[in-house]
Image 1 (cartoon, rainbow, N blue to C red):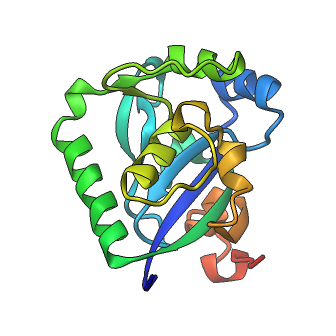
Image 2 (cartoon, rainbow, N blue to C red; image 1 turned 120 degrees about the vertical axis):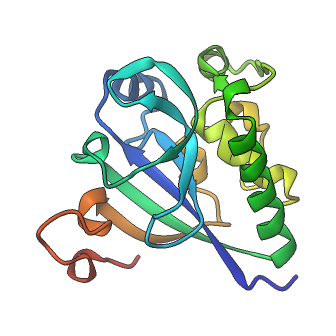
Length: 188
């Protein structure tokens, strides 16, 4: 298969109460997953807070990783080389989520299913890593050898399909700090 396109998976730790709770169960340092279409992180999508100050209003979001909500976040950015067909499929799925974003909710119940190893599917509801795994799987490329309903950000971190591009403070990479982004860029 010709893999000439790139899609990125961004894992972050925002330091919120919810991510701290998730960390107690997963033991993973990064507990939020997003899909990005460019290495500069201008186009990033996930399931999370629709309003950074309200954790109870969540669903499909286009994330502003340069905003205050991500100011202290640590991250790992991974590159995934995909075929043109896979890229187009993922793009089309994101367009669908955007078009019908009012239907989609955050799958908090499904996250509890992960804790108890129970596949708890809810229509129009996803948690962040379930969303990332589902979008890739529906495009014919499974990132993890398990149901998307049980995928954690830590599972994504350990898949051979993803290549680490950067690990560190998100705002240093995204050009938000005084340090130029190029000097903050590290390769694996």
